[in-house]
Amino acid sequence: MKFFIDTASIEEIKEIDSWGILSGVTTNPSLIAKEGRVFEDVVKEISEIVDGPISAEVTASECDEIVKQARLLAKISDNIVVKIPITIEGLKAIKILSKENIKVNATLIFSVNQAILAARAGAKYVSPFIGRLDDIGYDGMILIQELSSVFKNYNIDTEIIAASIRNTEHIHKCLLTGADIATIPYKVFVQMIKHPLTDSGIERFLSDFKDVKSKGGF
Ligand code: E4P
Image 1: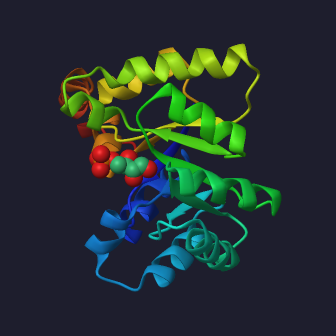
Image 2: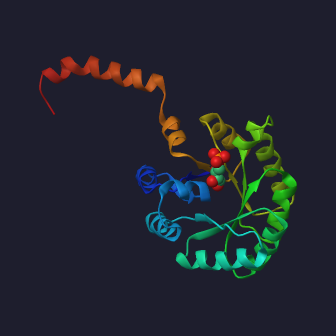
Image 3: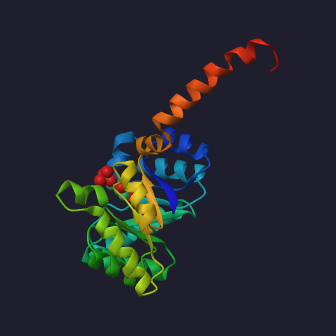
């Protein structure tokens, strides 16, 4: 499973990129709005930092407008993936754009049916939202499990980006389930590396070593 970061913050992207584990970035209109900058400028800057796919979302709802925005976004850089919400107009746009070799990430996926339609229309990625399903009383992980086996059953090579991740348990389960990618908020990346036994272990090693250090050496 590859790791993407779900943010539009340049600082967060640079920090996680420095860990050597980052394969891509996803943004959405809410994340971009939080940065208070021009949309295209943020997307361009991100695409210059990270080599892998950078998802930038369209804000139009009619097919023609979606296609127009998507073409402009795709021109920003070779690694831009256009994120399109899964609607009928979105599907029509995915069909047109995939024929032009513009990569699409079909977003706001909440069912296997939505995902299979997006994949068949030509989406390179689908983004099922785990956390938002959990929020309304469903188990979002079931969608990831079902999608993984459906895509396997029918040899579909559209990649599954597990999105709307809220905690480390989501990631652990995605790894066991077979999601291709998890797009993770900064704070969850930090939680992934933390373990109280690691912290207390380091503390004990350092305090046991104090006497050795007092004898010299580097
Ligand atoms: C996915 O690409 C979305 O940007 C994101 O994961 C949404 O997550 P949220 O439900 O925490 O807003």
